[in-house]
Length: 147
Image 1: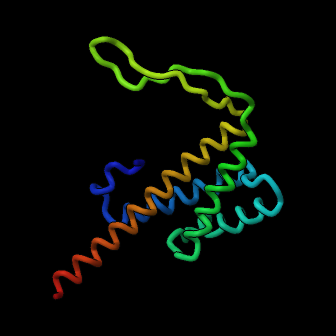
Image 2: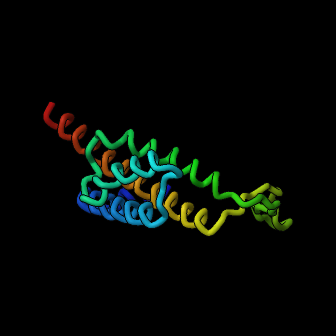
Image 3: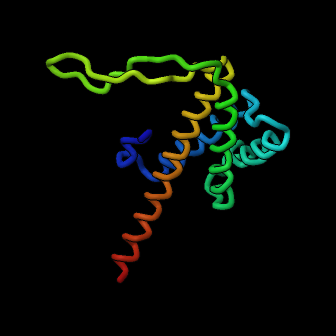
């Protein structure tokens, strides 16, 4: 989704991208004070510490990233000011625009910042997954060639 050209990157490049995005995620989460209460805020700080220290590949932290998504969703839900109906284009053809009207949330300023954190988290997870997929592929090829 966010790394369409992952096949063009070397394993080193993918790891470097993941590390950079992890640090970016930690900085943006800290800037917006992610976590709606002191318990969640503390959990976020502990989860992000390994990203700030450039250690995103420790398997013990994979579950923490999933919990982070839930905390982010909860914070986002609290920042919805109201909803408004918008026309969303679904496709365009020779007959013109086609689409549907949807209720879309309108977020506070903090909510907009949380949306940026969410996009960084999605990019981080995509880079993380692409890196682990490449490692698994190389491992499988080594096993295949050594058999």
